[in-house]
Length: 615
Ligand code: F6R
Image (cartoon, rainbow, N blue to C red; front, side, top):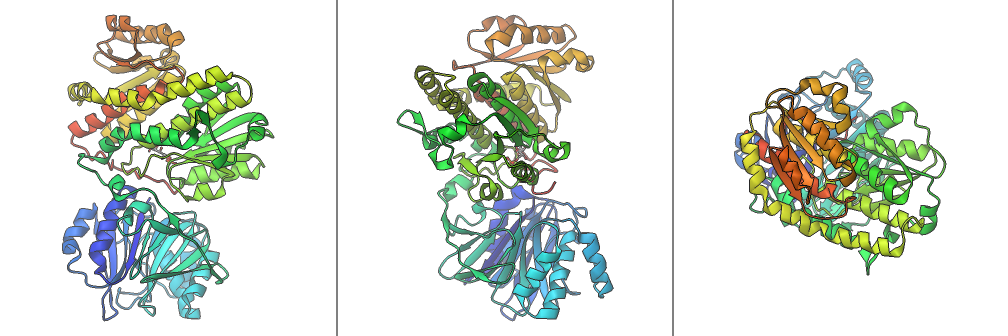
């Protein structure tokens, strides 16, 4: 949801800002802008509606904007349509040259209408529909009064309700970038003669792997080779850097046409790395998270909260944990959790699943669970994210940076962590013996190579996608774990290829949806669970007799499916609890290839952003 970058140092700022913005474009891509201050102290703002490349061309790759200090922004519109006027940076005066403050923002200022009224009464005029312009002018208002950036920012932070990471250039502080943050990501990297700010690590990995996290309601004054942090009371605070182990290769396309296909191929590695981080010498070790056997024994119920694909992981986890560990699991959409006044029993473990660790609804659900006094565990991919700082326990997926908007490798790694939790919970609570425990771990060790073997056969899916690339609708069905996988397959399809798709628990079809099945409708059945196989097959047959074209994803051995299905893919043998991790792979590929064949922007589908930091 919007990407922010900033640079100060001995090099030209604009090319560095553009390069960093390109790595953040997944966060928003409806407009972009730069503010660069030249050596005479004059700030110039250039903005463009549309993709970053339009801005890039407008400033000739940065060559027309001279200066060693600047900030940049790529936008995902919240307040105000995508337009040049609404694009950031925003200015406090009538032009960038005479503005005391120029700023960029990621997040939402909930009380911007009330703040705007106050500013209008004080003579401020507004040129855009954004909440950001309000923030910039509010900072200008306090700066004009107190002549101090820390005072201006702390006063503004006290007045603003909502979430934000903000970066400012002050006319009177030519060699500094100022930032402030609450509930939206912001990191800072400092090298000998330079400093960088960004919404996410890939933007600055090229320059440094040691980063500072700026905390909620904190500010930072960033100078070339230096940074000072302050709390909201304007007291200086000392911070340490964190070392990021991702390298630049991980954040680049590395010969693949798109990040999505690269990340699909990175799944065996993501699975292996995540497994090896938690399994040592044949046993699961959750010590890093602080989850002890006593805590695990005391859990009475599990509530999983998440959004989108992470919620689908929660659905798989429910089936696996309930079956293996016999603990009741409820899965809630994070966006709904707070609003249905959840009744949460004492000794519940609330699990939040999130790749970014910044999803506003997931963060709010975590806070809701904490306010009810229950223990919280977060499964995250991004180190130091907002959720990581608030959860009682954290487990990290080692998927590396995920750039494509549609998740693939983080989803798979999240699922692996849920399997490990399930096995560990079952063992600690004596639901399985050590032989079963070892068996499950051995089965999980097969996952990376099994995923790799499905990927080797990707041309078949590519061929199938080309045959069906012009369809308008697709239906995905399954029961149990297969239903949870159907949900993810359907989301992958619609979000990147814009084909309308729906996922149904197979038994639900005849309660309404079957009326949509007509000649040639594509129906994808997922059939990995032995005891449910025949039931889902019956539902598929019901659709076939109404004209549906059947695509089956089946466990190996169920070869009679070919009697009814028009196209079948078999999954390698693995324990049924984990086979969903295999069945999803052809569905990711199907969504991907359909999008490519339709000529769409796979990595940045319209209207979407990678990390959803607004409600
Ligand atoms: C879909 C997708 C989204 C995310 C959702 C949650 O491909 O990526 O549905 O899963 O926005 O994001 P995180 O995991 O960052 O909380």
